[in-house]
Image (tube, rainbow over all chains, first blue to last red; front, side, top):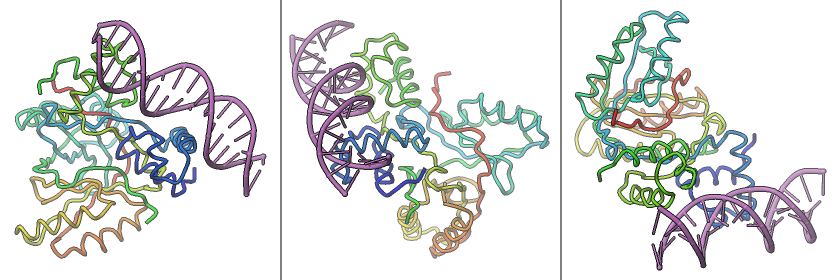
Length: 155
Length: 155
DNA sequence: GGTGAAACACGCCGATG
DNA sequence: CATCGGCGTGTTTCACC
């Protein structure tokens, strides 16, 4: 699907506020509200917009600690990798996981209630998986830039 | 604000689908739709729900590369830190940034159209800041677990 | 917790280039 | 023929009772 600059404007706006009505969008973007609605529907069908989500403040949910973890596996066979992925899928504290280049095999984004919880998490959940060789953690001290949407690459 | 298990259920549902109507929520959660609406409003006012956002697929927007970067600063004075934060705020490819414990000073989440773009980004934008000493990048090869909401800590 | 009015989304249709 | 803007209907939200 080829996106034009109106599509990008719509996407930028919906990334900031998914509840913005089509009529308000049509005041910012030189398109009728019908057209806005039609575009959004196409963007949804094409998978450009994959979901609408409520963004929560972790602190308000009692999740005071955010950490990034670099994991190395013990072995790199099909089986070990499948086990690892199944393992992390089942752990809700792991928000996302990526296979990465560099020293580690996987990069994890993890939340926990506090540092003791995080420690327990590493010891009893991560290192308890026998496919995991090592874990190196970085705890977030302060978020200095907050996610507010993907950039428009046409710059 | 103290959250009960109904609040958590509402939050879990809205993290997965922010467009779910109150009436449909009331079929899952044993609360009337009026009550659901009232709870949501309180959660918004308390800042537990901080935004409703459209989630986009980076690939569909022409952003094929995701990378994690560990940045060390040259100096650690007030001025250098302020300059750095202002710098990263102005760079849209940097999705978020955290001050972290460990070897690096800051952890960055970065997107780019492709590897050449990412390389240009590091050379001409990150290392061009004179407060930056070093940058160590990990490129995401494959996302093995996708973010789908914060966990319920009451487990 | 239920009910009403207002706002909203979305499909239909004629008009236009 | 594809695309656009306006209208009407069903749905959702929100304030009041």
